[in-house]
Length: 317
View 1: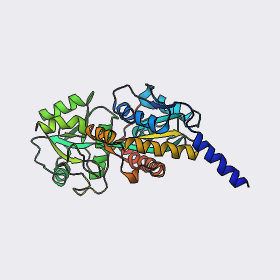
View 2: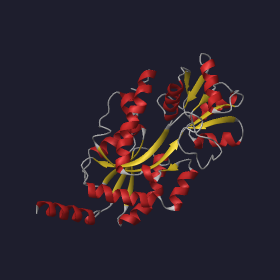
View 3: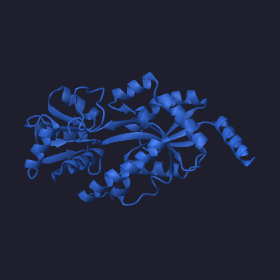
View 4: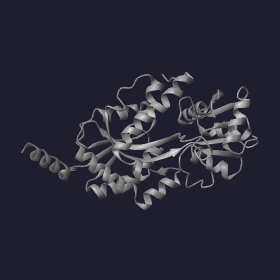
């Protein structure tokens, strides 16, 4: 009898939700990639759920303030977090501690999309593919330099992970943003860096820099001819910034499942998926969307990034 009562209560919770507007918190300013991503599918999510979905930009602390706020919010499905990978996977080794537990404080809802980094080199480098670059880097690592958009940025961490994977120790040159890093790559003042496709595409199209590999398992729609690192022999290598939806830990499983199904439906609409691809992102593949996959993925990503970041000696105050 108790089992039946429990089932009935779960079904009632599932069918009654949502009874009021749902809020998705983003820890970054309007116009950023996380903000653009959530605003792509929020209108369709509103339609699917039958309630208004409101996007709230809560800026500060590099996204940590918003992430902590959602972790402490009521676990009722009405406050959600659209976050990018760094706040849950690279934050611990970078900052030493966080005001939330990336694993224990959140209920994964759905993976949305990821934006892989690219290995981009100066135009006159005598390497035209990944095996050639690896051989060149290993032979010349003492004199080479790689750039980034700043210490601890995704472009910096991506190169740290890549350098560790190929076994080289190369001098890092941090810049204040991606534009000056790309400018110096074009001028040949640095040898390579690991930008996002949106940053690199204009220069690749203009033939002012040389793309070597995409740090993903699948090619990008916007750069279909550029092979992945995986295809070129660096098996299963991925370095990307991914966006996903989370609820506070303790949110009823029936609500998480309803949110998951609605989110997948909203993101999978042709207009949303196409716009993500135009932004240089890859909508999550069907086998990477589930809450179960996302929970394991977060744990695996923490392990993957922790070693190379700690070995590099990098920390952010």
